[in-house]
Figure (cartoon, rainbow, N blue to C red):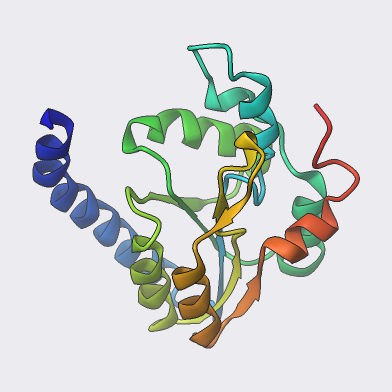
Length: 184
């Protein structure tokens, strides 16, 4: 109960913070006519395999999660020059560790990391970017892999598919990484 109260109080400030950072990022990259939006877990990071292997451990480190190299290769081939917004459903307390992971394993170029406490909040940020430029969006919009049954955020997926953007979904990401998704 205490966590819910804290979340209710703190969340508006977190949203305000990320919203302003995104506005600044978009203004700074206003000459770009396309922006790349990337989810992290199970899209560019092999998170579910890592979590499955660490189920018995209490100390899980986000910095040790391996990348999904085939997704990154696809992005590098087709969208290497685009500004990147990483949009992830992760606890804000993991911001520094996530940021370090991105800098070490993904990119050295300037990017923006936005963390949302609710996956539905991703739609808000995507729409914010769409007001300024075209969007290329990679996101599996799935969860629960590490427990053996994959679930999808169907409502969000349906809303994303209605938007005017290029969307690379779970099936695309799974197909790209078919030879590495069960390794590690």
